[in-house]
Image (cartoon, rainbow, N blue to C red; front, side, top):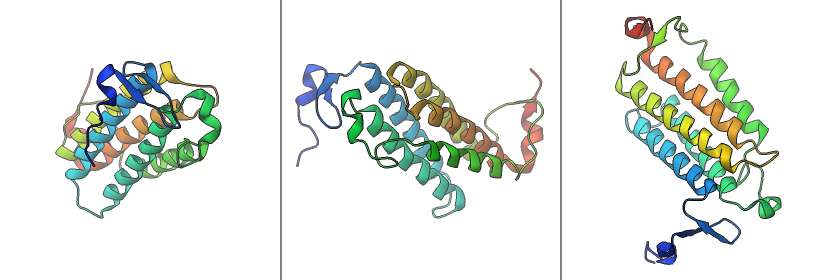
Length: 180
């Protein structure tokens, strides 16, 4: 099997459950940004120990992003075919991020001043993934449909990534803060 199909040479791409759309369509722009966020999360994973708690968290998030991209790649007329948690983002997926944010937030002292990213490589990768996730969230707005949890998921994910970055910076965080 070849990796290239040549079907996209006309500037279109396939949608989940059929149909084609231009590659600059809002849903494809959103999925492109989510794909970048997922790659940035992969960079963070490359910096952590395999099988560690943070590695497992990141793998779970990356898998969630596949679910999210499946939903975004589906024409609104085919939404009925989506499966919760498999190809459709659910409110439970958003709530799970909130639980992680709250739990991780108990592991370090929250900064009281502006945080300058780059305290260490893992935190820097997480902050980069956070900014790409914010862009994905903005892009997803143009492709959002009523009843979807895509935008809330991306919003919460960016909060989680900020929290994870601060957690990874640990006790040395106050030395890397400054007033704005």
